[in-house]
Length: 552
Ligand code: FBP
Image (cartoon, rainbow, N blue to C red):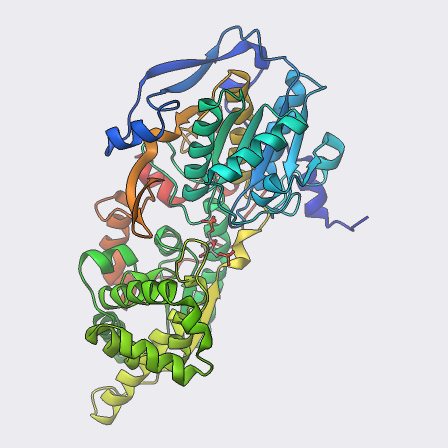
């Protein structure tokens, strides 16, 4: 058996904390309805697409007798998309609840993500097997994948597999896209009277699956604490050596929640927020000019060092880059075969430049070759450029360097500029979950099973009041359709769960904006240190600053 560290052993014994309302016998918990709900926009379109799971009520748990809770059931679970700390605890929360309700019930974990359902690859998750995964990071218990479940053919295959394994409920743990697919599957299964229920669980380190009812997605807490520890260490190194500017790209496919939270935790000199760049139409040149301004001012104060945070998704929010990427996406999607016949990079760029609009061709040509190559790399399953593979931090360093050299030659910059680049992304996705994520995920899994025991389908498991002590957390379910809207995807209007971007009038951004100029010029770093698992609650259990500010 694999050798465990003392901390790993201790974490296996950690009992996640849960809301009071899900304690006790599962047969004594019922789901109370609190009004029929509808999405905020495209009501008619969504109603038509989801005729069978539309207009369901939000439910909250309360004490009451549920005669079906102890029925023997087989439940399936699948992890979908990128890893996020706490996924194993979701599975263990479901398992503990299911076995508590009836020890003969079974939990099947589909392997390697949604494709595991289509290929009928699953294992039974027993308490003995699951024990070694309690409070651990990673998704290695059953793996994950990015296969989209959306076609009728796939749904028919799912039904076949559920029948064979006598599965009467499926839990899909994923982000906005996976939960949109959960809603489509729930609708299909209900329309066809299969009796199979579908429950979603909000996962993503990006923190962009949240709304009025879902306060945060799991994994965001741990990932941002891990990145903040690393950023704090770099800030301290910068402040010790006083010779480097560190440019750190942070994960988050689209939204800048991770960058914003880390900026609140560490107070770097620069933190770019993509949503602001888009709203204010800030160009790449303007971004660079502002960083140069900060470098020069700090240099005049004899501080030729600093730390800048760059969100991974930035490139797609810069107006001229957004247009370029969208033209490239269409060009590449519509000319796959022809593009494959172009053998050299020179041939590829020549063809690209010929087919782009004049403005985009100009922007493309002005980029360094490495970035041009990265922009032409394979798209993800949604046809999007893979931003985690674009070295935006290096692009910005190059442009800043060029500008400073020019200014030096003109006598306008007399200091020194030496840059280091970093990318923090995969480092945080499989970290051992913080107490918050351990507790939250276990409670989400446990809640998902109670929703199943109450006969519900088409819901997302919800645990709220998260800024309060766990005893006051509320548990229940939110209808998936009420979080939906319609958006253009590959030229078609499609139902989607709305991605939550950083709100510029929200409290976390306002707090950051209030202090950023001072942090830019005056060294004001905070060194948060490592995630703590044992010790006083204010050190070990505190949620993110984003969550606290949003709950005020
Ligand atoms: P999910 O939205 O599936 O949770 O994944 C988010 C993420 O971690 C992004 O931050 C990042 O851009 C992407 O996954 C990287 O994907 P991959 O794991 O395929 O490299």
